[in-house]
Amino acid sequence: MECVSAFIDREALLFNIKKIKEKAKDKNGNQPKVVAVVKANAYGHGLYAVANALKDSVDAYAVARIGEAMELRREGITRPVILLEGFFNEEDVNFISKYSLITAVNSIYQVEALEKAKLNKKIKVFLQVDIGMHRLGSCSVEEIRALLKRLENCPNVEQPVGMISHLSVADTPSETEYNRQQIEFFYEVSKEFKGELCLANSAGIFIWPETHTPWVRPGIVMYGVSPFEDKTGPDLGLKPVMTLKSRIIAIHKLKKGDKVGYGAAFVADRDTTLGVVSCGYGDGYPRCAPNGTPVLVNGREVPTAGHVCMDMLFVDLGPDSKDKVFDEVILWGKGLPVERIASLCNTIPYELLCHVMPRVEYVFG
View 1 (cartoon, rainbow, N blue to C red):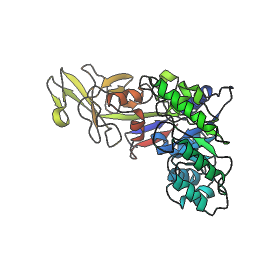
View 2 (tube, rainbow, N blue to C red; view 1 turned 120 degrees about the vertical axis):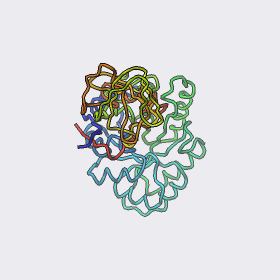
View 3 (tube, one colour; view 1 turned 45 degrees about the vertical axis):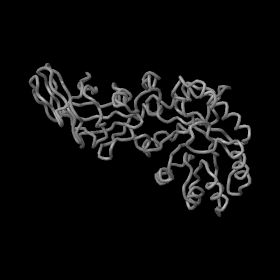
View 4 (cartoon, rainbow, N blue to C red; view 1 turned 30 degrees about the vertical axis):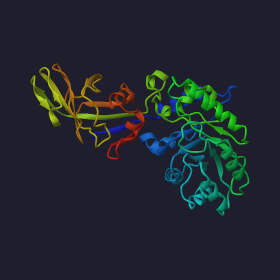
């Protein structure tokens, strides 16, 4: 058994979906369709395991790449799957049709591919509209109308055509005016569409009820993590789904002035006890974690000491430590929100979760 494990809590995942559904009501109090975003290996949590756990709790899944969608189909997932980036090759259109995938369409090239294809089964599409992210889709009303008209006239496209977009600053409450502009533009353009709308992301679900369209797309909040810089998942009433764990594999007594690790990045300021933990950047723990980053050992927080190595890291257990070799260490998760680690590393929790490496043992419970 590997020392480093990522425990994935199925009950926490289902709890979070229930909380999301309580939040995601439209203006009439109706429940939108919930699209679980499971791209990037379900934000590092395990694509099939997460999708399978949610099969009776969500209406559809969303992925970024066609390979992710095909993996879900190969594993027996039959619910609708949306390709958030659309497709990149003409030959992909046949796979999208054959495996009943839903695709976003964000360019004239994709429209042309749909028009040229010879299909036995029509494809459901959402036209992707740029309301302020400037990533995918058009922000020109004239161009949107032209693309929509061609999709409506395309014999390979299931009617009516839906509309999808993404909020770029919903997780930044100080950008109130820009959020309002994006939301207003979305609904203005939506008047051109007869199909369903999809707008709200994680942040939109929690603090922008105006974005609760007939389809909503929870991402990071499903995994018990906050999209907001000043809040953690537990602050939002969520439970962390991933707990990254390891063990102490060696203990050393240090004297004041002893230097630890590569570059002598930690110097003991007192006599203390040093623990060596079997987890490093080769497992996905951030190399940039500074001295003092907390981990949990036997229920208490202790600080990291020195540079994170590829396979190990150091922790200052304190002069009165009673900890033993093989005691469990929690790097983030239950009792220690990943948001705290991300903040100290000047990054976002999404990145830490997605960087958990293949050699880490996944335990689903």
